[in-house]
Amino acid sequence: MITVRNIEDIKDVIAGSCVTIGNFDGVHKGHQKLIHRTCSRAEARGLVSVVVTFDPHPLKVLSSDRNPPFITLTEQKLELLSQHGPQVCLLLHFTMEMAKLTPEEFVRKYLLDGVNMKELIIGYDYHLGKGRTGDFATLTRLGKENGFTVDRLDPVTIEDAVVSSTRIRDLVHAGHVWAVRPLLGRFYQVKGEVVHGMNRGGRLLGFPTANLKLMDELFPKPGVYANWVEVDGRVHMGVANIGRNPTFGNDALSVEAHLLDFKGDLYGRDIRVHFVQRIRDEKKFSGIDELKDRIGKDIELGRQILSQPEAEIQLTRPAFENGSTQNRQD
Image 1 (cartoon, one colour):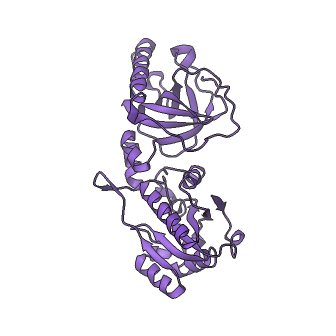
Image 2: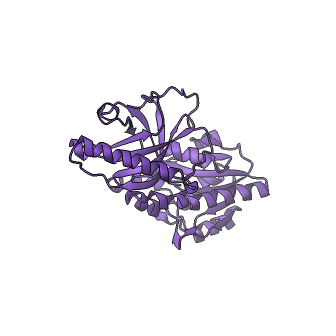
């Protein structure tokens, strides 16, 4: 997938394209259906498949005081989009000036003059342009006037409910990470740089942890989770704690992952934590001994969960290129 950020860099280059457009937060099963249909139609008609999306998310510009935490930031969103086969991603910088464009102006500037669109595939509830006035009927009219067709897909439902970014956020917030997997087609994940923590995991408790510098916006409900932890494209069993370490009186939110059966130095490296299943709430313990005993039980539960066939993980890409395998936990 080629990512283009400036429309001028691609203008007059594409002879004809099949386009889908959206925010694609999470690149969930509904988004994937749109992308797959776009790629299929492009191939059938000899067109270029194009995904159009935005950075920052329009809500950050239009309602900065009421933003939800986003499932995927731009880097991860582009990575996930590329896995589903589009040839081009047009990543548009969203501004207040863009928000003021009418549907006619947006379609002409970016989709017709920009990528020579011949077919547009949209989701069941997608709107574009000023005041969200570019609905299916409006886009269909514009298509008849400008020589492109418009196809609107039905919503994707799982367990009798529509797959949506809002539904996924609510489940993650509630700690229901296992229920998120069928909606995303993957485990929910966060990425972060391993930094020095309080140096309590290995030294004080006997369970070294990788402390993440938080890079993502959406985190599961505080508690202990069974995880796959990805380092340099390899995955390791793990148990992670999200919370404020109430036994030690901390205030700051932290994500600490213990990698099972692992030795090495992780400081300064980026790792991914894939959340498989919640084990328990975060709890304030009476002291170190009670906490150590509980962590030992958490690790055994985590190992049992991750050993089940349904908890297996498959990576579709090398996550970190040129990575060292010399790792260590704090």
